[in-house]
Length: 112
Image (tube, rainbow, N blue to C red; front, side, top):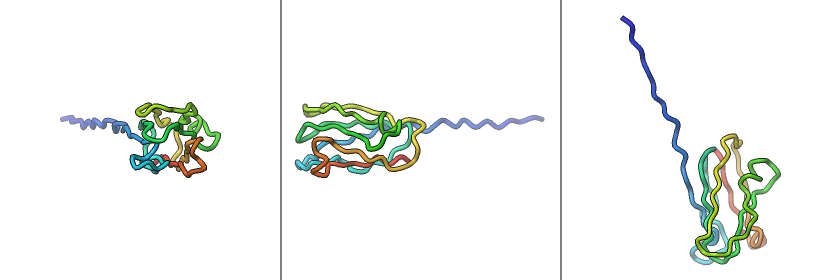
């Protein structure tokens, strides 16, 4: 008698997260300011308050360049979406809003 055992392991579904650009209370910040993601996850940056905003990732790595969105967004609700590259190394990817960096508008995308 021959028996077989089959495992159907489906890959984990990629998640989608939202980051507000400008807090509801009017503070110049990303909300949330720290976000943990996995490679393949999607992040939607949404212009919320006190425009204009963008998100520029520090460093010259391919991942930082791929996630950066230098174009300023002016309208409430305007957004852009990025997917964390499947080959992204684990670590903390710091990003900032160019017009509001001096005011402390900085965020962290933590790839696990």
